[in-house]
Length: 148
Length: 69
Image (cartoon, rainbow over all chains, first blue to last red; front, side, top):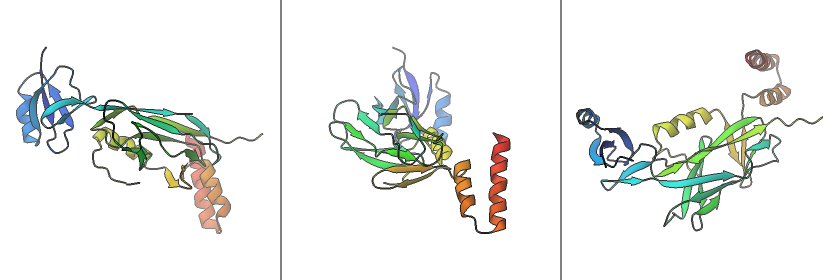
């Protein structure tokens, strides 16, 4: 299996670059990044570096009960959270638009507080720590409350 | 709830910036979201306007949005 050179932030473990040829290493080091060898499958979106080792990010799944709500202040969407893998944390911080909420988890499963809207808009829900966790954000779209 | 951005990647920060225009509040353990720039929000503000200058500014916002949509 061919290995890659991986550049990561030594403070956070975030992978900032991958390359197959050594000349990039000096440029990375000039930026304060640490370079190590990593496996072929290593990627910025799916892996991170923990204690000097390239590891897969923990996968998080977000499942809204509905992705489209009426912007009437009453209709609401609930986003369920599932942290996959062994030893999930007791809580996980999710972003809701520009805010965040710590969601309590039981055996890796929990739910974000319901989301409602009073005007048409689209709000994104994602995981706050996208270095440790891998998660596809979900969007909740509030549509105009039309009463005929 | 916290506003810490520690651990956010550049991609996540970009997404957060796009959401920055929304107003979010927590009411009775529920998130209530609104877009202050939406025609509905501007119209509601217009109804509450108590002077001509304020109303004129809001009307301009409404027509600007209508013309750009």
